Amino acid sequence: MKNFYQEATPKTPKLSFEYNTGYFEISGRSIPENSIEFYKPLMDWLDTYSNNPNKDTKMTIRLEYFNTSSSKCLVEIFRKLERIHKNGSIAKVEWYYDEEDEDMQESGEDFREIIKLPIEMIVIKEEEEEDF
Picture 1: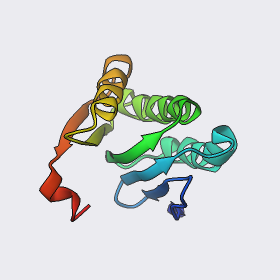
Picture 2 (picture 1 turned 60 degrees about the vertical axis):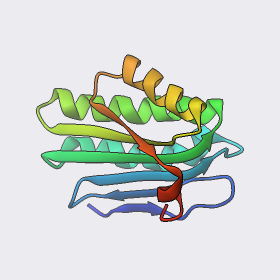
Picture 3 (picture 1 turned 135 degrees about the horizontal axis):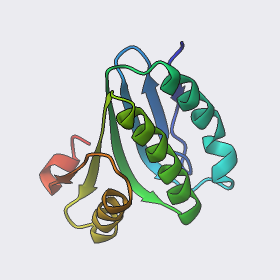
Picture 4 (picture 1 turned 30 degrees about the horizontal axis):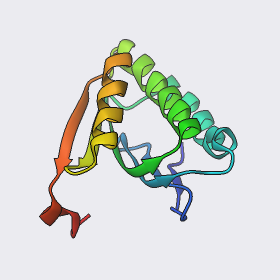
């Protein structure tokens, strides 16, 4: 199975999903014109991945902003990871947010409440942002 990679644009996030390592990353801004259409290839890839997942899958979320339709797609992505987790593999999410960004912090906490998956909240301090 090939890795799934899509470069970030001003309106869409970077999507980096490595099959061999089980390391997944979504970073940047997610405000595509049509979120369902944008995330569909990734959803299909995740369906295939979930048939034979790595024993350890880690997803890093480093979004600076996402719209409501992207939020719905993130829930679907998390649900796919949830199924992997329920089937005996380890699957977890690291949710990064800027210490000044209460909206992103609350979004991560909201996802943590509705998704049965370990979601670790990680604060990015201002001095760390320069390396981000």
